[in-house]
Each structure stands twice: as C-alpha cells, then as structure tokens.
Length: 144
Image (tube, rainbow, N blue to C red):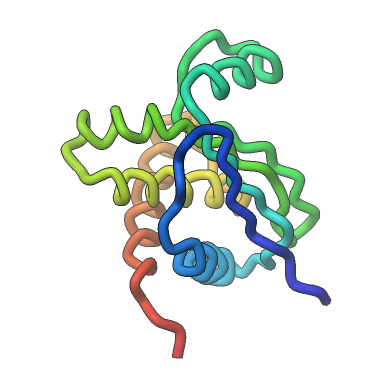
C-alpha cells in the first residue's frame, strides 16, 4: 500500500519550522495507535479564518484553536486539520507553556481525533489529555 502524505499549509503568515520533524512525529504517533497514515493536511490560519469555518460547517459561532475534518477509511487516516495560530499563541500564554509545546498539543489533538478519541464528556477529555501528553513525549524520540 502506498504511504499517504502529511502536508502543512498556511493561510496566514505562520511558517512551521522543521516540517520534517513534525511529519516524522505525526507518522510515529499514528503508528503507535496501530493506524496507517493516509493523506493529512494541516492548515494554519488566523482566528477569523477558523471562525468562518466553524460557523459555516459546524454552526458554532465561537473561536477555537482547532477544527478537524476526518475522512479516514477503516484504519487509514485521512483528513484536514485547521489550526488557529492566534488561539495557539493565546493558549500558550494562558497555560504558561511555550508556543511550540502548545502547537504540538493542538496538532496531535487533531490526529488523536482521527484515531478515534473524543472529547465531549469529562471522561473523554481526561483520556484525550493523557494521550496528548503521551504523544508529545514521542516528538524527540528517534526511531531505531
């Protein structure tokens, strides 16, 4: 089977540093969940761009840090993950973490949704947070 592709796009002036490390990390996380990496697009944007998507497609008139559109088929993950870098910046200050750590949390949050994790109930949110922490630790782990 042909391996999917992970792409990073920007609809604002955000420039992801070291895309290769992020791609490798996302692929490792997907593999750690016994899933297969299909085509996944990360689209970085500002608050207004993501707010428009939230209103248009989800009928939510709120700002958010991430919206994921899951097009996965069986164990092959496909989809688009929109991330507001404005929200990531604000959240990094709110939670007193650096921008890159908060960005990793949001990126992997979208991937975990594709893996089947939810975050509607308190129990689901708790599991999602634990999984985020577990997967963030994989970022600098090299494959042997």
